[in-house]
Length: 238
Image 1 (cartoon, rainbow, N blue to C red):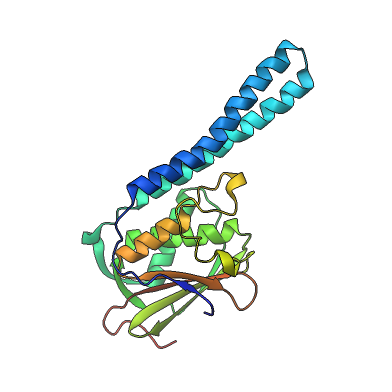
Image 2: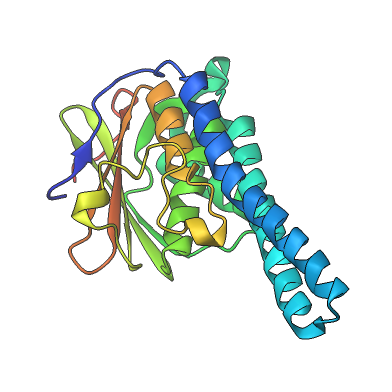
């Protein structure tokens, strides 16, 4: 994987609640301000009997409400997934983690890309539930970037299991790769994307002793790489 943004911190980093709260206030503040303005404008237009303009303002107001709803949904996912169960760590294969992630996506009613796994019998030492949530966010990110399929290629490097998620979506521009894991950073903000998916994925991977990095795929889309502790004797050479 060339030209990656790689964060080498091992273990769960301290969560900056103050920075997260500031980001949350900013992300919710913009659509709420727009809702207030459109509500006032709609009231004035109704008083003037300008039905067409009032209808247009009302549609904009409802769109902002829907955007707030999507933001809150992303924040709920982040909050429910951020605390992994360290007591749940054990031996688990990559294929088992991917299967658990696909089941979670189905339970949530979320779209999932076609997935092809090579080397899925590689064995990790990890909290399967937490790692599955991380994979859910990686796959969800691929879908949101327009990907129809994801190749998951598993190998070994420097004594760790390396899992590459290679998609055929829009990709992540090189100049943005050092930002995509920051809380509330999103290139799809106008669609109500909370910008927390890869933030959550990275924190869960870190909590399992690994790292997450972002690069471009050899074809067109993105390549997200996880490096995780392997179980003794549990992975084949890439």
